[in-house]
Amino acid sequence: MDIVVLVKQVPDTESLVQIADDGVSIKTQDIKWIMNPYDELAVEAALQIKEAQGGTVTILCLGPDKAIETIRTALAMGADQGVHINDPAAQGSDSLAVAKLLAAALKEIPYELIIAGHRAVDEDNYQVASAVAELLGIPQISMVNKVELADGKIICDRTIEGGTVVVEASLPALFTTQRGLNEPRYASLPGIMKAKKKPVDVKTVADLGVDAAQVGAANRKLKIKALSSPPERQAVRMIEGEAAADKAAALVKVLHEETKII
Amino acid sequence: MAQGVFAITEQRDGELRKVSLEVVSEGRRLADGLGTELTTVLLGSGVDGLAEELKKYGPEKILVADDAGLADYTTDAYSNVLTDLVQSSDPAVIIMGASAQGKDLAGRLAAKLDAGVAMDCVKVQLENGNLICTRPMFGGKLNAQVEIEGDRQIVAIRPNVMDITETAKDSAIEKPAVQLGDVKTAVVGKKMDTGDKIELTEADIIVSGGRGTGGDYASIEALADALGAAVGASRSAVDEGWRPHSDQVGQTGKTVSPTLYVACGISGAIQHLAGMSTSKYIVAINKDEEAPIFSKADFGIVGDLFEVVPVLIEEVKKVKG
Image (cartoon, rainbow over all chains, first blue to last red):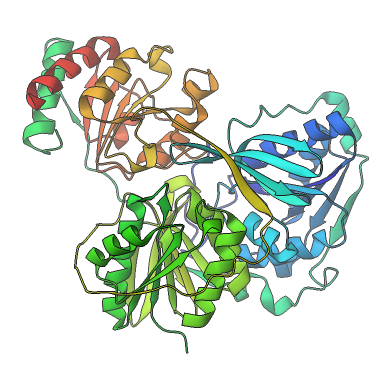
């Protein structure tokens, strides 16, 4: 089965995110960049399907020059090839514009299955994968923690509030990953060596035939007007007492009498 | 020109979900601010009773798409029907919940309508007739103020944040003809949590345990029981296999904003703090007085959770009588 995995490079979740001087973007110089954690699950899922039934795994990524590191990481895990949409004109695109670029690239790549993270943990927009599926006219199943393929169909456990629903779709299809789906493998040393020789095709907005007036920072439908840090909390009030029991009793008193929660 | 507000509600197994009431209440507030009409949209099968219930929240109109094929949410049937309804009513603002359903639907609808989406908003304000939405990014490390360009704006609001307001009206109920369109997905099974487990993102109180529990969640669960709370967990607790992934709070798990968040034996990694820092009150219980969790807490106890929590349970029971 030919599988395409959509990946994004994002700031490490353990890193501090600070607002840049322009007030609408973040300081990027001291950030460690990683593959979006949900995309790691997507790469792993694709590799497991390939190992079970053959086929190819292609990594599709939109990002600047440094995003090649993330593509190489996926190739080192075992993916076969990459497509890197790298064009200053595409930078700063919003979710729908990113989806238009990815969908345009996907028209040139054979696939029966597309796998993506259910969101990127930077802007947390939850939209790119759904919009890609719509633009390609294929079904989607979101936030999947179990997947089976049989008879031209995909059957997934989709996590919802309070449980999971089992959703079936015809192929070709797209699904997005949720934690619990698998444990992503680490790239092996031979894998890292091999990854350096695997082909990565670089595409520009013009190569993809997408109208430049639909993409990029200047053409966002979702405009970021300002970024701010969450309001600081007042300093913590430590509940003191002789023993644990005294502290616990004092805390419940505060929650009951002052905050009136209990 | 597009005008009016569309509030897309959610039902599951014959009941309106709480986020629906938040969506309609917020929709009412926006429609009043914009001086326009609120249309509530309900999709399902045999949902007349739910339509009546929605009148309490004051829409001018309730559009009911009633079809056996809409009993369960599927992306394609729901997005096809909603697109038809949007195209015939031409609303300027579409508001929905940033729930599992809304997060699946929004991107699809945005692509069909070529519209921008502000996802997971915690605040929606009006400025000269424009919507200014506040939405957390980076799992809550930053807040963005965003504005949507174009004549159609899609806003998904974070569950459990906006107020529910009753303003009953004798709303007109309309049942337009439904075309499901091309449907390639089907719900073939459901595996719901049994018992009265409270969903984290909808919980009013959460008791969360981390590495400090050593995997023993008995007292955490007992405290949650006493408080009527949901149980949460840190990433390390989930990575250890102590709790299911669905319990994880943080940047790579669930973002929660309960009234009270009780963090037990959680040191407060930056990705965890991002997922719970919008809670109204935060209590931290930790052996290490230097733990970063105390920097985000309102109330702190330095102590062993296995000594503190059992007493908390007794005291809570006393107060609750």
